[in-house]
Length: 480
Image (cartoon, rainbow, N blue to C red):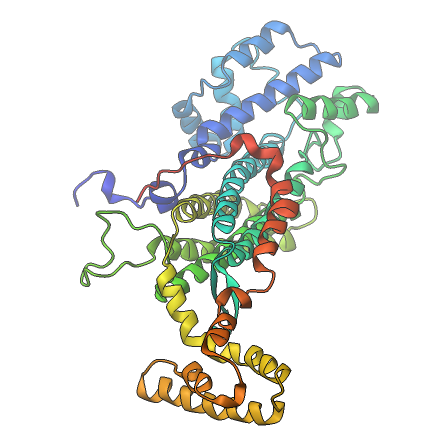
């Protein structure tokens, strides 16, 4: 076997799909720098509350927050078989004066769990920025096409008309619900805080000689130093794993919305009504050179399924934790949380790309409308003919017979729908051809769809994204 970098598995989420920004949040550099920031915050808090820690020691710790000696930590871990202690010792090798006060009173979960919360929080904020941009793309699309009639579909069968723009508001509405969930989760994110080995803070009670108020203040000081309002009031050794489930459920919600939207786009592309962007040199099929496959929408659908299925993982972890904690969550969390975020990052970026360049084929849309509209227009024609003195029952029977003939012609003979020709040539309706054609204008059949688009944008969408206006305009460069 040739020994090179192509001999080992690489994760497609980092190699092909997610952004560098999202990958960085779950990188070793971010993780272990955050551990060190937490150790600094702990030392500063303990010094403030009277523990014998010097400014010189704290400055030494601060000077090496990002200067992580990974190789030394890795070698130490081979000996001690403990990831946190290996980094305590590695940090101490760089901070000779401060090595004796690193991690003072804390347990492994102090750095591990608090960092997990911070990573999820930062990742949610990045997801939010991109989600707002995606919603804004849909806003622009909906307004542009708010008046363009198109066939509605129920059961993927032709139904009452809507507009192209109104359909886009359905996609945007789902994503706004997801945005509300993200906002709630970010606004209510809490650290594990300074809780000790089983959450009782016993080690800190000893450190502060039984002073309960100082222990509570230490928890507050660390939270504020790390940018959080508070920690969980109680914990075992870890924060409740319910939080992991709640966070990944938000990502699952986004994946559900994205899957629904791109399924719609794929169906419409099959009908040749709407098409995702297709670049000049893009190849749709290795065999069929004419094809323009909706591969970006398919990629979103594929990754969305992965995210939705991954949401089961933290649910199982939460349900099966033992008492104050068991370690069967650790390996699971290393995979499920980062990879769910990376996949979510990818589907939103791809979604931004798709919605920024959707192509609408009005002629095909009109062709499909004209194939179905005669059937839909018959009720309006019937009502108008009755107003002019016609007998409703007789006219209804005439329309039913003509409809059967037209449907046979379309389905069995593959010909165009001639229902309107049949009706217009029947003097029973007492209407001119021009009058019937005016009734047949598709815009007469879209109801309040155009008004609904404007109202939705003004009353729901704009308020949802108004606080993030400075982030709108983000462009993405897809890897492949």
